[in-house]
Length: 509
Image (cartoon, rainbow, N blue to C red; front, side, top):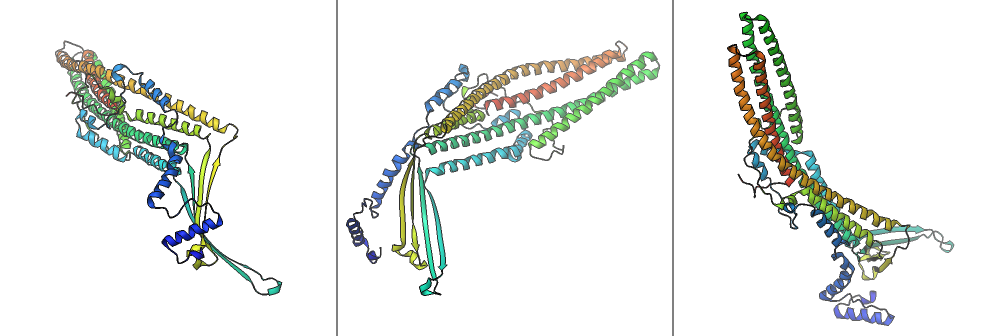
């Protein structure tokens, strides 16, 4: 290289080619190609090597047929369409007409630790996609080396030491050519798992919102039942006062004493019910605080009262509603990831190709490292074919196929579960609506009967058992009415969870 010092441009190129011709070297690669020529050469090398990376994984048609077969199990009105709708909104919270409920859901989504953990898993999956795809590109490393060694002189030059220096730096490049698309399949699997993690996060978010709504409704139910129990105690005490006055008058003292005893027993039972309702409210309040990411101190106020539903369920829900369920999309993405893994395992039976190269400088003097004659480089290729591994690769294919079958059946079970949840919630909506209407009438009639029984008792036209029984009937009817109202609210949240979000676009007020 020293002879080329001072030359440049065309003279340098001619000198290089002349030297190659003299030495008989086969230097078909010209380092001085134009930019366009270099691009053509790079494309000519890269495209054949990565060509298979652009093809779909092996078995894609089989997977599509399997998914269609699973989706075909639905009745005509729930046939799943191939094009998924947009991400479900949270407008379904408007069904409940409670600003406090919306605030509770927003707090839970912001601070719930489980949801944050699901979000962290999405970030992990994204990082794994980058890791899997890194093998598609050449890997380059740089290193430097410096040494100084001394050896004693020989007998002819006693006392004179020999000192040797060596300085070098190199850039090593290695590229495992993904000729068959093995790495590409691995990256596809990682992408599918990332998408499944993202859908799982959305499913966790929707589930947390529905769970928060249901827990807040349960807390409001418990508070309403507790207040009803307090009202029941107040009425019981009023009745007891009436009976005690009858006893004080001395009219039929034996009967009056029995009436007072029965009334006091019912009062004690009402006080016990109040404590039980208070304990239920306290447990629910602490559970709600845990969902909100707060310390369960038992101080959360919740909604206070049960809200009223502001709209009904539409007569016919569109079939694409189930496509909004993020858990179904996550299960489908896991099937795709398993197929990519199976394809990668099959391609592992094919030969592998590797290109290596290095470029750098080496010299005995540090200041000579920048000189052209200190350059060193090498370029090599390698092909490898597995001949025998004791059945490991074949077992790997069987393993990935079994995982694909497992994920497919899990997806099928998720679809059936989704249909069951939707159909159950829709049917429950009708039953609960009718039950609520009947209980409203029952509570109204029981209240009227209680007033009539009290008037008749004061006139001596009925006994105390009738009075106490009508009070208990009124309390039971009002308790059942509160419970069915709360159950209907919880069922509405479950319906939205089953449908994967909102159906406001088809709902009627």
